[in-house]
Image 1 (cartoon, rainbow, N blue to C red):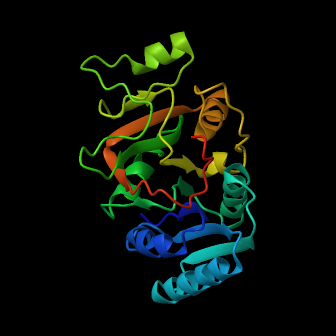
Image 2: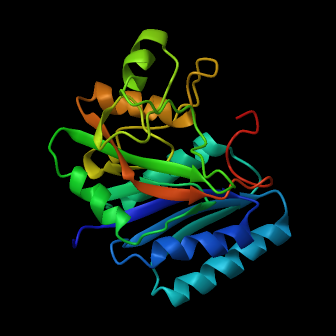
Amino acid sequence: MSDSLCVLIPSYNRANIIGLTLPTWLRSRWVSRAIIVAESMREEEVGKYEEVLSKLNKAYNGKITYVLGRGRSGSVNARNKLLKLATECNCRYAVMADDDYVLPSPEYPARMARWLRIKDVGAVGGRVVMVNKRMVDPDFFLNAPIPIADALTKILGYILLDVRNGPRYAEYLTPFYMIKQDLIGKVQYSGEYLGTAFREESDVHEQIKRLGYRLIIDPQVYVYHLGLEYGGNRQKCR
């Protein structure tokens, strides 16, 4: 696959962590570029980001584009900035990931991109597996022998994810998903939630569907979520 595939990662106060997780993406021969928006309220942490990312950029032949800032613009603004940078880099496919996600197989991006070659598929998501003793999926999941999560989501309006049955078409995806080029510049995060029913990604997934595309979830593709207690770009209430 010679297509341009970008990984988009927002980061806040986790320079050391991204130094550990980012190489798992860069080692994949399918990933052509990693785009990072990193922020911190502390000047020394911004300097640490510069040190870590510039070192990785040299080690991986200039595959990283990064924007550093002092302050905290928030997860929604950071992710929208990443989408804009992806359009400027002319990415054919873009993976949205968090800074504490570890990619266990370098072949997963290629598998996800193959799904996006289906004409009416706009995005494909994988599993997000929490690294702890039980190795559970940290989301609103409903894994049942009969795939009923999507049907209940339509009825209740509360997002329930079946992340074990599939690959299959789905109503919503996990926070780890890939989007095709045609949509990168047409969707954006709004931060609009309906109680606990909506997450940051859900409004993006709704926009994709309204544009006439479908979503696929592939449980055979997954990332390990370190689930750290500090830093991170997402809202603390989540």
